[in-house]
Image (cartoon, rainbow, N blue to C red; front, side):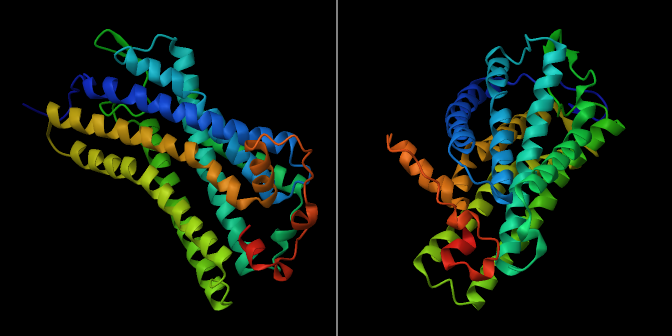
Amino acid sequence: MNYSNSCCPVEGNVLTKVLPALLIFIFVLGVFANGLALWVFCYYVKSWKSSTVFLFNLALADFLLLSALPFRATYYLSGMVWAFGDAFCRISLFMLAMNRLGSIIFLTVIAVDRYLRVVYPHHHLNSMTAPKAACVAAGLWVINISLLGYMLDPKAFMLNDKQQCESFWICRPMTAIVTMRKCIYFLSFCIPLSVILFCTARIVSQLRERQLNKHSKIKRALCFIIVVVFMFVVCFLPSNVTQLVIWTKLTSSWCCQTMENLTTLFYITISLTYMNSMMNPVVYYFCNPTFKRIYNKVVRFSKIPVETDTREDKTQDTASQTPSQLIN
């Protein structure tokens, strides 16, 4: 049977079987890794610079996003019945969207920061102080919240006598708010991806021109940069492609089974985006030399007091940096 304007009920049998285990897995590993990162930043990193501020905000966004996942796992375990009330539904959806976008924003800012330090070592932004970077970060959070603040309006709705908590429900009427939500989600992938790809390509090109890519440390760093780009694409591309397919299908007649399959695929791919927050601590390890040293000592449960080497942290003119410092 074909439908064009009606809405088919989504049973979500596959979602209730697959997503709870996946979300709990991402939550456990992600909270541990990002919690450790925040702990190291707060208690061990003594000398902060602009890149440290952006890395801290990336860890904060990831940690806050992951903290909402147990409620989503409970939701799917309960057969897609939300048991925590409408207000908390809106808050949890807002937390997921805000911190997912925040994570993307700060990952992009870090890519731009690396780009400026390698390609334009004398640019004035490379001398940005930590307080100024904190102001920039605060401004980015304000923009982030202003873009998604509308999600705090009552959006949870009743379907088939069950309280369901979804911000991307496919069958919702295409109102201005719903259209804006989907456009923000799509553009928040395309624009950062374009920026990250550009920065990565220019960094690789610049290092090759300087013939620094022959150093073993630089080779490892370049491989890491490529892995970060690959990780971003793998985590966010599937949900955006599925979103485009859904938009295409909604412009013509469709059947309930098709929408069931698309809904299942979309929510599984949405869950993959949370894996990016789980894996982002790798960025802190490789991007911040101080974090790398401290983390190595922490994981070995060293009882020796950690002295942060500020020699690298105080280096502002990247033209005088060593090859490894160009990436770190």
